Image: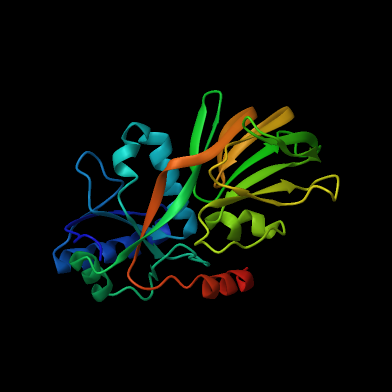
Length: 270
């Protein structure tokens, strides 16, 4: 059982989700949950309800990193209840077409459990970010390839060669970008690993690597590269430190999370 919810913030990013967000707001009010629209400020709620596709959850996380970094210790611990309106809704507990007052009442009663997901952090010079899905370090010139090297910090070299870039993904992110590149789909319950995959490598000997999440790595390019986290551009870089973050993202679950059913749906959704 979770904690009873008496206060909630509802976040959405697309105009098409405004009506859905307002409907969830009305549901919260009807069961006695004090709710407001927008990312929480100062007075922290018991839960943040994100209405939108999976990208909206990622946008929320990166809004916290970009705009609320000084409050991360407090605000990132607020559980996220994702009400999906996208095509895939891989993160969601319920979608906008099926949510009812009964689902919101479960939040009020604390009739839910928490699903915690590992986050990675990437840092380079003045850049710092977190990711739920993946870190991409890609050569700045999309028309050419560059030598990239991935090595363990104070350890051995993992891979090196010419390629478009390198992706480092969490188990959660294995069903996103790296799946499209032929990487493995990792059961989300294996939160103690990450996947390193070369992007369009020149040599077929450069293969995806499953690597312990607790072992820090460096991704280095011979030329200028760009750093992208969960699809969000963070700037130019040449050497990036990737490590397991001390933070975790907490999802609210009012029902079992059926990973393989979602994966099957993901594979047939265009």
